[in-house]
Picture 1 (cartoon, rainbow, N blue to C red):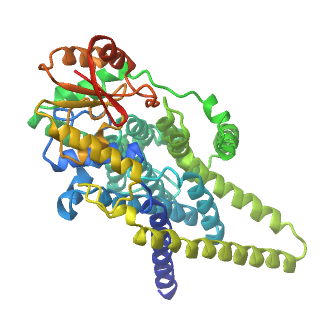
Picture 2: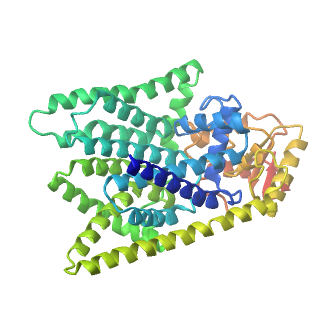
Picture 3: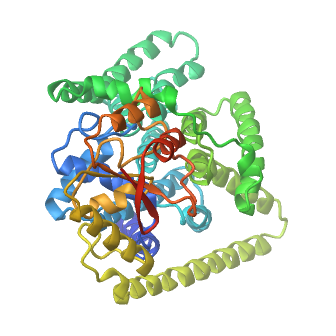
Length: 501
């Protein structure tokens, strides 16, 4: 009992340490992350009683906006609330990763060091995001299955509630992001086939039925919600039919050619590691690690078709945890071969204290950016929904200038730019399809549909298009921009935008 209590408090301290470190990265971030803005916009719209797909365009399934909207209603409809939720989500991801490594008997100091290295790779990208929500849920599934493998190595000898619960969590992944979630659910159902021995097929079918039932429940709830709110057609239009208009992609070669050396090395090493470990686990029939491996394969789906740094790192996250485990096993094996046990224990103790000192140093330094955030005057502005968020002086001036222009107009004003949400959020306006003006986010009619909508606008409607002296977002629907520039009349310039009518 005393050992359990000691471990309990040790875990709490570890989680609090993660919270502080993550907070030191997220809180001081200036307002410039479009993924953060778009995810906040989704949640804000739900909190404002708008219905996903029917009233605002989005491609992923809507569970994360629904969860976040609850907190926005309770704590205030501000981006800072989303950042607090991001701190909890990211901290959970690293804490559950620590528990997974612990369940695999990896030394706590070594686990902390590996997770710290992974955190350094990710810290420029962490924010509230549905891909991180899927990752956190997936890691929870892996941890639960590892716990049950520890009790009974026979996968088909657990309670029906275990399989049902795994099914619900897999279905929840679909509600965070349908593409990755569907692959995770398929792995949940079918990977145990590879673990079959003898006459276990009937047991497999029985356990799979519980899983399928669990997966179905979140999906059925979503479809009932969509039907009751007359949003099912719009859901199909944006999430299924609209995929054909998604022509954006980043090839794998971009990772190999990245200016980030760590990304370069991982892009070369990880495919080799995944292949070698897959063969090893298949030969060895390592059941509890094989499930880990299969879920890792499902996680890779998040990286396609946009293979940028953040999608790549989220996709390989389970494999980085698996690599940490095998690194520990190999290191432990090498040290165990030392004939002189005194040298072995000396190396072990020195390594642990070195890691501890290094991590304590970083932890203590984490208070510096938090202190800087507390005293940072750039967060003391009156921009609605961005209170307590640091905003650079140049962006603050842009927001004020553009918002004042929009509010001064008697006619409708649209911003056709990836940054549109930044300006519209602060004046509580929303324009479907225009405030998330990206390829693949415009429904089945795509850019042609937007052009037809523009043709139907009332006279004197203003359209703001980024001036050609400023680079446009790579996902900008250029056919629409070209139509406006060639067929409408430029009447003014506001900040970085040309005004067309």
